[in-house]
Length: 469
Image (tube, rainbow, N blue to C red):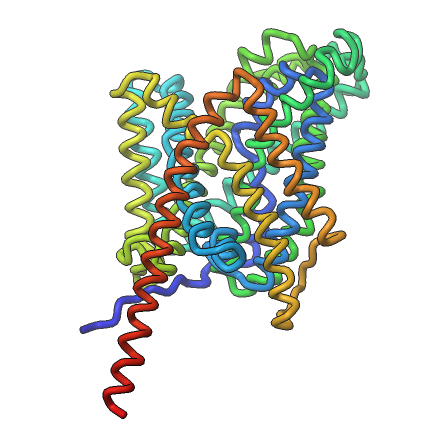
């Protein structure tokens, strides 16, 4: 019987991994969704982004420490398996896979809305399925194709943000031709810097936190590069300036020029509202193109990330063995198709089932980001000692270990408790808790069965040896 290939390729080039790491934090949430956070906290949303960004920087540093020492396509799921137990790796792996599977219909629908506004003759659901099919194809060839697409998607997003910041700085300084706004008076003239109090800043942290989901993809992608440890180290070291430039600088431009309570923020999104205030012609068309690229990039990454996570689960015996099969190019085709199939079903459900059903499905992923970050912190806390005992090479090390790690372990449950006190986030938290409990129970049961099977196999082996003697 021919041996089935189960190894991934190492086809990602250095420039692919570098650009994936740079653009991992840039999604449609920055260009459009940030308006919700601004409306909640006002100009003080900068504090929310800074706090959420700091938390992500610490989590990425912890993840980078583990990933640089032991690169793996399962990333934090694998490390949870080793540090906490098989049930933990199983649970966080499947929850993370579910999160990205749900991202597929979200991003496909967002892209379809833009394309449908350009060409109304084609139904929105047709656009959604077409773009999902197209990006599934890029993930089925080889990992270098995914890397190439993501490189150009990411480059366009980075250029767009840098251009926005440059134009915004000129506007703030009063040097932008045709613009009637200047200065940074909007930071204080609409009820002050903290118009809704410190509670609103904390509430906005929850919104901003989910904008950063995706920074960890580089630790998954780097496992398929030629020098994974080097790439992971470089990516985790650069996460500070990436968040500072892409988020803090661009949001500062928005809140400096656009009143935080302007209806334009909710109607058009933060970037479009800012460009309109600056008098940039064709602001809507520009933002539509940029958001379409950002959405396509996120969908591309969602398909890639979901497939690699379920592939890793298969390698550890925690998913059907078929997902381990790879093509001659090292692509886990079954894993890609399995993830895409679920995404397709949810895309179709988005148009066929009542809206309440789709909303409930989305709510199940509402707090998964925080659960993943908590698992990363606990895993690093326990795995660091093991790595040092084994004398493993650790090119990346967590700062002020274990104190900063413990700070993250304490802060995240506090944020989850705060979510439970807010009516707007209570349903999301409850649905996430429900699916998490179900997955954890399944994980505990399967890990016990696996341990029992291993013990039985060991007993049979010992009995066989005794018979031979």
